[in-house]
Image 1: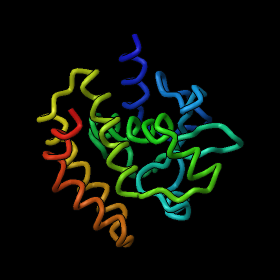
Image 2 (image 1 turned 120 degrees about the vertical axis):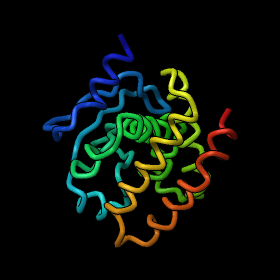
Image 3 (image 1 turned 30 degrees about the horizontal axis):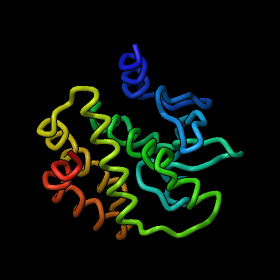
Image 4 (image 1 turned 90 degrees about the vertical axis):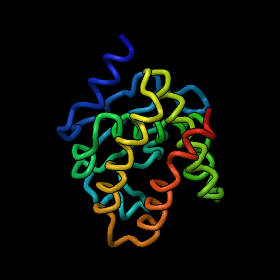
Length: 170
């Protein structure tokens, strides 16, 4: 049932009107994580690409780009949600948002990627499928942030290194 609920959440492409709980996603203090949609500009103004793990009124919330998110494959949407859940579960969001502590961005992104890849394995999605789908999704994401050079470079590097990275998460 958990898989059905999460897949239902991921496959919905219409913008979220209110906060929706993400089944199985909790932060480092076991608080339920919620998800909502926002404009691309809002995300850019908050130093984010396709999605961001943040705290809104002390509520752990994933905010995703309602314009780009529906263009991603179902694997890409799952990967993105679990990547942001990883930031919460691993304590990255609490440290960076609530405590305003700077963390090494490469390390925390790699950690969140591994968290997401492990979750995809729990769904029975093999590495080859993940890598094939994500390489297309990273192209979509890169186009949505093409004027944002930091993410453009980072996303291309992450897409290129995805095979080696997925194997290192085992």
